[in-house]
Picture (cartoon, rainbow, N blue to C red):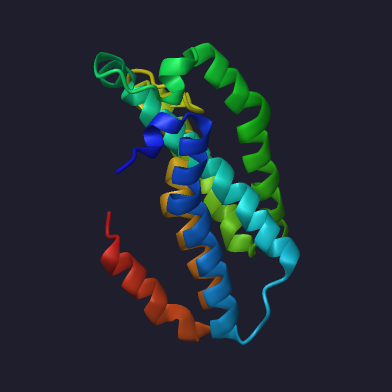
Length: 185
């Protein structure tokens, strides 16, 4: 009955909360329950800041990709209301720094395998930029683009966490195998 997309920043926030924040917090709580531990409030705050900021970047990127269609159909999304430069500046000054702060706290408790995965990601992006002339972007779409940290969050970070779990407790091997079977590429 209503489209959140037309609500400007509030629509972006609602989308990021539903797509990133809630699933991330749910994962943190379920992991705590599975381990028989209470999840510290500082960890919940860290996950909240990181996942909300990452979610905002994704939602805003998606809306920027749809800007022409939204203008043609008179859907007043955030990118229709504000210029790409204004949005990029807001992301550079507020959203991305918040994401980096959240990520720094995540790294503060991460196993060494996450750091190895991070350096693997950096190498991967460097090679992709050098070999295929891919543009690394924060939010504003470009030709031949890749979004900063997207592949880290979707591929390298989960594998780093799972490998860290396996090294800490070999009983985690089935989870790693299931992950690799479900997400083979």
